[in-house]
Length: 127
Image (cartoon, rainbow, N blue to C red):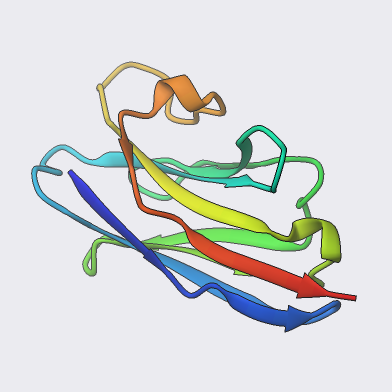
């Protein structure tokens, strides 16, 4: 599975951005997707996750009610709509994928759960 993230940029506080992550490769059976971010000098942290069919989502408390994760499986793309951005949202954002296993949970928060990672896209929010 290969992942390509895009959509980052510079935005003022209160503004919006939409990140995209396109997957390719062996995704038969479905893949769960997640977004993580890493600010300078900090560890990579969980932002949001969505199950293989879009039926389940979960967000970090810090982004709940501001960010929305969604997916278009026909386009093999996952989105992260980010509204009401704050300077503390500044980070490199990474998308990640985990192959679905029927009968197992469908939302994953830990970095270690994900076996595939994109290259990251920079989001900078100015005050």
